[in-house]
Length: 369
Image (cartoon, rainbow, N blue to C red; front, side, top):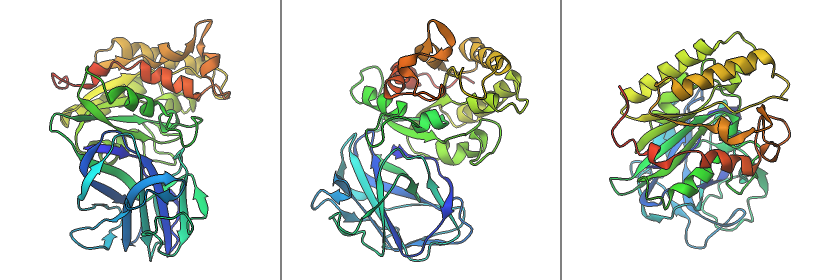
């Protein structure tokens, strides 16, 4: 079962003999934890000769005694081929729900394009040399707000437990939510899910990437082109919560409402073919953002009308309704607007998460065919 995930893309150039101490926040708890390391955008093999996992105490310091070495097919070192992923062996013991897990990794030979996630909204740490086994913060003097090489954490849960993947752009990624406090809208959704009686879905994976589009590749692969790796490859997924489209329609590239609807249809067909449900969120307002104009707004309204009534999706979460200004429905409610008229405050993130009907994530009767 996936308890944490991020979406990887190219992130600068790898540095040899560098170690990263990466802080991530679990959703569902479980045992037999495994981590997934990615070289998805690498152009050469990448070796990790030391990987540890522990629990955060404060900053780069770990809870004493919690830091343990991970192995890969019984070995302490693993080489990931270009474009590849690798999963660690299960680690004995239990990982709590909604806790800060720390994965420390070192590569002696990193070089070429590095794989990572730029917009983490979480402070992590780096150093030169292999200090992965250290539980103190002393060697970890440099902070970084991106994740490198790590793209998923899984745990064993009861068989009836499921997960949801939030597939989106910078809003899902959490841009402008408070760093280190886990206030992205998928985090708020995770809080709601942990004790819900409406569903057995407990795992939440965040597959948001800043500037991502449904149809076109930009600095990251489109939602259609990254669906298999970033969504369908994760274990335990029951439902995909799709919240993408604003970057397609606001870019003035000629994308029509029908183009975007056709993209949604292709994506939904693939998710359904994998046996999962799709809950689609309506596109939120963005009047006041520099690219807004009446033509883009007309496309947004047409697409949202389809999301609500077109019958393509298994369920709908009306994010537009949750965050729009009652006095100016083309705009975000002022209390939810971070100031750029596209992204959201922590309270705006909470409002979107609150619009999701948790029972819709259960996918009890299976996806529509």
